[in-house]
Amino acid sequence: MARRWALMAATPAALAGLAIGTSAAFGASQAGKPVPNSYLLCGLYTAGNENNFAGSSDTDHPDGSSSMGQEYQYAGQNCESENGQTGDGTYTWTIDHSMVHTAGHNGETGVEHVEFTMDVTGNRASGAQGHISNYDLSSVDNVGDPCGNRIIFRTSGHNYDSATCSGGTVGNFNTHGGAETGDYFRGNYQSVVYQWGDNMSQSPCKEGSMDYCFEAILEGQTN
Image 1 (cartoon, one colour):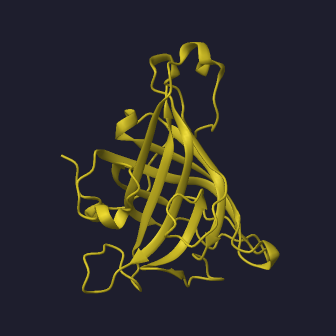
Image 2 (cartoon, helix red, strand yellow):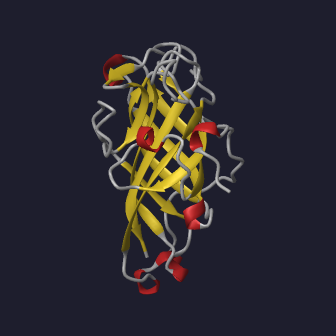
């Protein structure tokens, strides 16, 4: 039985190295008619190798950060509305490698490469890559940005959930294989790391705590 996302530990997933992209096996001749699919991922976030600066560079390489939690069919809701609700399965999400500027005219922008699995895709190895558009998880700046009832610490990809107060940018994903059986899932994504709620709320990542929530929205198609 799936556990509630608010109660799941956010330990790093042990995944093999993956190449993000497609192979010739994903030819259109083997794929069926595309079916729209969108999912919401909700869990807790575990910071990895933050403050991984090279010398006096302002570029951080926060690799190894991860999340585990529940997946839901996405219909415009966010993770606060799903808090405590059992999803359609579980996911793992690991930032394999990334780089982000923390100062200067490029401040809080960068790129990330992600490995993830979802029960809904049969835990097929999958990858994502996108641009980071907000980053407040290093010693340079670890004070999040207020945004409605959230405090935002990290955003990447598109801007499907406007409750990030961060401009949308680039982010795409795909499963590694599946077209031969009509199970190739690909599209665009957004992710956000944040806190919300006070001590009187049921939030698993209260403002000012050491815990962070993770939300990702995947909008795409399967064929």
